[in-house]
Image (cartoon, rainbow, N blue to C red; front, side, top):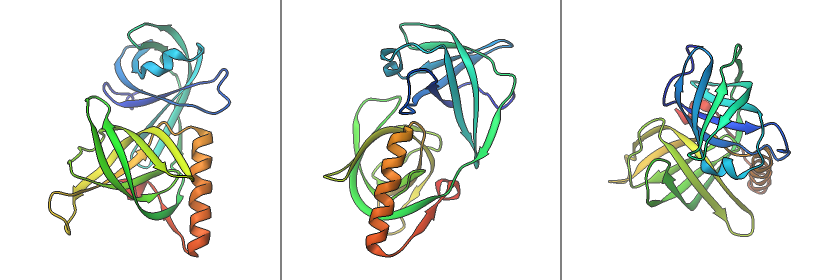
Length: 212
């Protein structure tokens, strides 16, 4: 399992009592011949325990997943999981893209403090935004998106690229891939995008290529 590496972002999906398809952000801490240890969002520990879990991670244009068992879970949000024998790979699906100009905010997963940003594109795959801080590729973010009367979701995301905005000094454009958007929330985002595009009479697509 050479694809699994220490410090890589990985998502934990309980397979028991999780009809909404909720996902929880984690970071791979260590691995050996039998087990992998993941530092997971403490919110995961507040959910009913599920021995059966699915693990997801993203690499280049693909999403990988495997099913396994939780061997132990500790109060400091560490999960010990049986190492898989097989990984499954699928191409990241393209999503219809909506051009917007809306305020959002985010936090960096490993830091304190909240930052404001302007979302410029949205799909169920991810978003583009303008921020006043440069963000390294693969930085994990917690995103708070609120469109009054229409849509709200909070999830984690992975920075795929970040570059200076040539038209505005001190402004950076970033592509962010959603990592923990639940199945239900993804459907709501896709429905909102479709409704707004139908009003505008136009469409684009957002794929992993836009996230790099």
